[in-house]
Amino acid sequence: MANKLIAYFSATGTTQTVAEKLARVSGVDLYEITPRIPYTKKDLNWMNPLSRSSAEMKGNAPHPRIVVDDVRISNYDIIFIGFPIWWYVAPTIINSFLEAHNFEGKKVVLFATSGGSGFGKAIAKLQPSAPQTEFVEGEVFNGFFSDEQLKAFIEKY
Image (cartoon, rainbow, N blue to C red; front, side, top):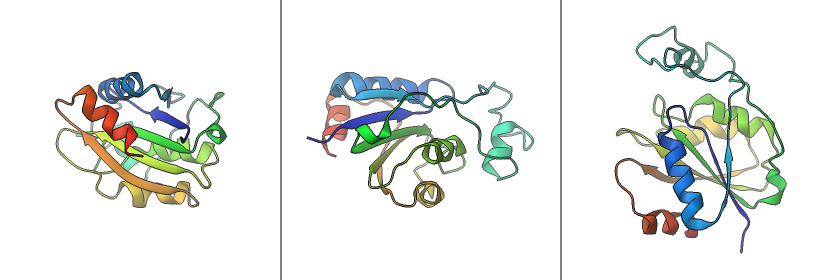
């Protein structure tokens, strides 16, 4: 059986809720991707083109720095990475996480939360940050999902 990790970034708590439920129903290790400078409500105002998140997503700002601690990616074969969909892709903090660790030869299964959009070009935007990694579009969770659905998602990989 493959060693699995659920890593996630959550700006408002929605993705965190899904990630924690995934870990609870599957028994898989859980890791939070944490920005060095937490996002404020003002930072997340996507309607303001000058907000932090808007600048990051438009490429007008460097990828956000993350807290790098003792997560050992080398211990895992499959890493589930969860995030909220921003501008039809993953927030650039996910690129920061990929760049901070060696994912060579790993399988990365994406999961996301969204009010309605899908993954868009998430893999295309993430691949340059971990070029020797196999990326898989997993699931977008919006609305209700049962424990059985979550467990089946993890067990699928």
